[in-house]
Length: 128
Image (cartoon, rainbow, N blue to C red; front, side):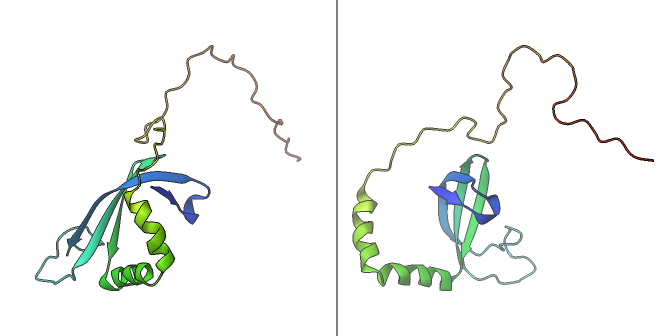
């Protein structure tokens, strides 16, 4: 799966759906409800982003969200007709990017640059 976010600019994330389950855990704490409080049942979709960083993204779907998703699928016959062959097709093979788990790449070995002035313009002297 590919994921794009407006908050990350042009960064393209790759990942996969790790799990889908129903739960009553509290989304803010990711823990079961405490002190006798009752939390509504939700559907939890866990996505693992694998490149360029390793993140776990959890999406909690409330019943209205799930109904909206099903409604979009049922009310769009073209989506259903394109989706059936897509459902049974083999997924494409993608090259595994280097550093899949967000590890920093090792610096390339080579001759060390001699110490010298930094590149760019010199600082502007202050006027007194």
